[in-house]
Length: 95
Image (cartoon, rainbow, N blue to C red; front, side, top):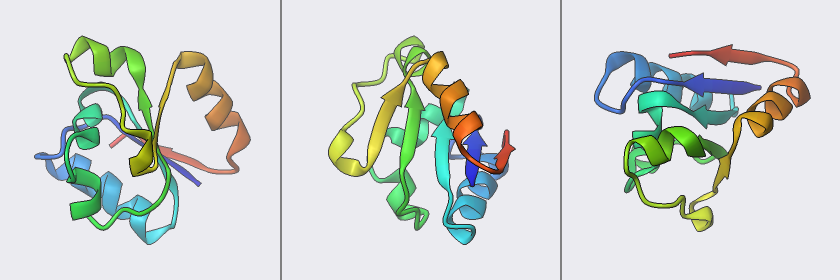
């Protein structure tokens, strides 16, 4: 399962998307303001331990540093997003 989160960490929608991903042991895609989850310990603090993908264009537009791949995060482009959505059986979002 893949959960797409577009809302920031300080919003109920963003938190709900990450909680759903945790509950379903799903991977997560962070786009739009959801890329702010890639900063610091936002995902770990929410209990997320899966694989996170960050849309690079949205990260760059918001002036965030490059993704730290040692945190189980990977930067992707739009083509990578489409590939992920077609590879997963279920796609849920956008929160």
